[in-house]
Length: 427
Ligand SMILES: *Cc1c(COP(=O)(O)O)cnc(C)c1O
Image 1 (spheres, protein in one colour):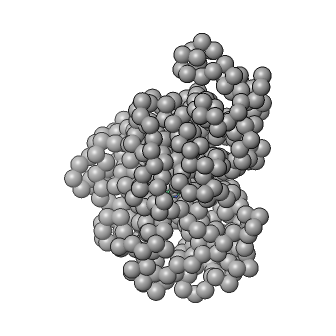
Image 2: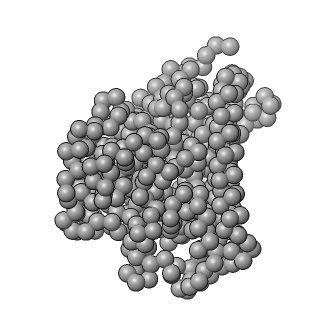
Image 3: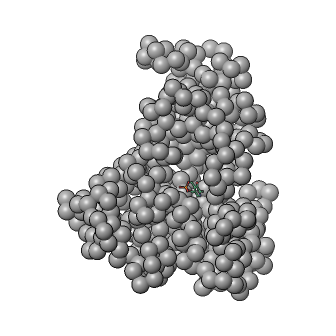
């Protein structure tokens, strides 16, 4: 191992650091594997129940009427998430698009969207109109308000009760931290929040931005009363194989509304060709539990090592995980670039390029991004990114295989060490 890792540019000290971390994390890794085993069965049983067959893999074109593969896949998602219905489509261009479709489907002019968990993910600011943007909900006369989280990261129930005025029609709950160094909420915690909200306003739609959370736990937010759960297929549920797409799972009424918004009133879920993507969407979903487990192990491994090197991490290594994102507060732009350089150098694709910050559409600050992915922009593949702003935290996620994740993290450590930013523990 030392020989091949040396060939891959890792010093013996870095490899030793990795070996020690892996040993220390053995019990946690076993726990992750048990969750993957459970979720594997969940997906498998949903596929068997819905009689997935070779006929489901046939391509469709044009309108895509009576598309067996598409309709069956949506049943498989609905059964896995324990919802009445699901919309799983390559026509949902990304997670932001899926969330925008759900938001526009569920509110009308004069209504208000409430985020009870503070500021939403960067790209949603333009969807909502928090940042001025053409075509935003704000332009359509939809209001927005948010309740900040308490200093300890918990929900501010008093302020939420007050914010639930009659005009609030949709509550947007983001599970994952996104680009904020806050905590990620477990499905059960989200469930408690939904119970509280429904206790005051049973008619309000509770939508969960589930990005990066799928298959991390045995339950999903839909097991705890969410009306809609929404996410991206180039994150966890695509298993690395889905080339594009998004999903919206939820009650039949809510999913119908989303379908009429995605295609057209009157058409809804009946149209939408699959363009021959069915094999990768099915197989990706089948692999998603174990791929998510690899990403989780990578995140835990990174937290352990970067804490040893003296960097603050969110979440800290010992805390339970509810998404696959690991943030490391590196403290400077230079350190962010060195980290990104290491991740990039470890990639199977584009390993020879150097990541530089750029003005990414939808984001306010320049973002540095390391990704050498088979699917462009896929963040279930090992990738690191972060806005170049204080506290200079890099957020990384993914790893289709644990061994690649491990190498990527070690390569980032090597890069920080070579740049004189991190000092390796003496061995
Ligand atoms: C990634 C992400 C999104 C947006 O997904 P895209 O596919 O990048 O558009 C939304 N919310 C959260 C929390 C995310 O992590």
